[in-house]
Image (cartoon, rainbow, N blue to C red; front, side):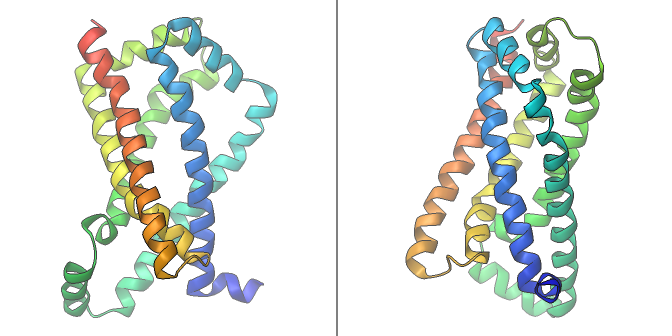
Length: 211
């Protein structure tokens, strides 16, 4: 088992499984965030649910999932760059690959940069601050044009990252035939659009109607 985990395929499987786990988290996170568009009471109730003890237990697992995904993505990217001659790789990539698939690591890094901003500005206060009205606190950020635009751009980057990452993850764990790949590509585009639009529509709403 340990030998498998050190192989290129093993590393891809680990990165894929951690990525699929993070997609499940994004589904929950988006569901709660969309309550901002329902009412202050609905969003505050969603935040109270996320603060329950059994939900907090998941946070260390989630953090580990992010770390594993980032570390293995970095290792595989470095190995791939060393293994392929640059000119040949660039020529083949431009002919056979989509733009997101050629720039997965860059897109992931941009999403990570946004995550760091999100943790520093919102998550940290949620975790350690004394917030009496979560809706008022979050909406106070989203009505600011700079924050709103950053959130929209990050949502687009996330969608582009998932448009390739979702089906690629399933391919790495065995769904690699032509029939499954085509189906998973459609599902990947669906998730990419849902997350990009879903996370974008919230700051758009507050930038238009929040002031």
